[in-house]
Length: 113
Image (cartoon, rainbow, N blue to C red; front, top):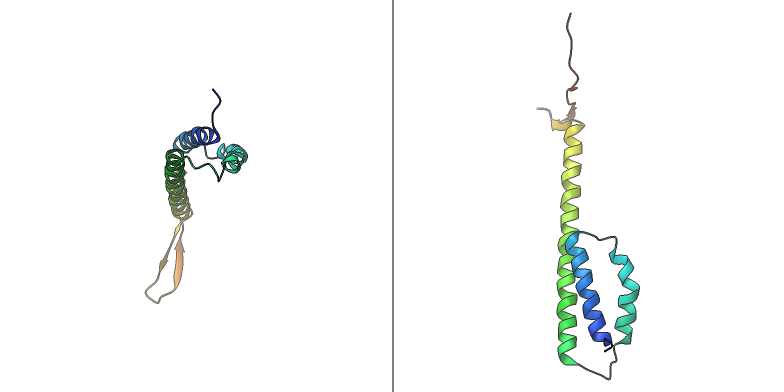
């Protein structure tokens, strides 16, 4: 038995969800052309309500997962930026209100004779 476009799209969305959950965001672009074909193949005249409800639910769930993944990436970028700033030294303000940078000490051992 051949899958209907609705079934094929639901299966594709399940694969997409698995990729998002696995963090394989680069591979998502490979699915986009096939997803577009399947969406276009859905007949507007044929309204299989249960299938469309499942498709809508899968699309919404994947959208929530992608939003959460983007927020996680932004959070990680922010944390890396903060760590780099501390690694390079940090800025503070003097009693006069001037900004100054305090350099981080070298981690190399000093040998005194």
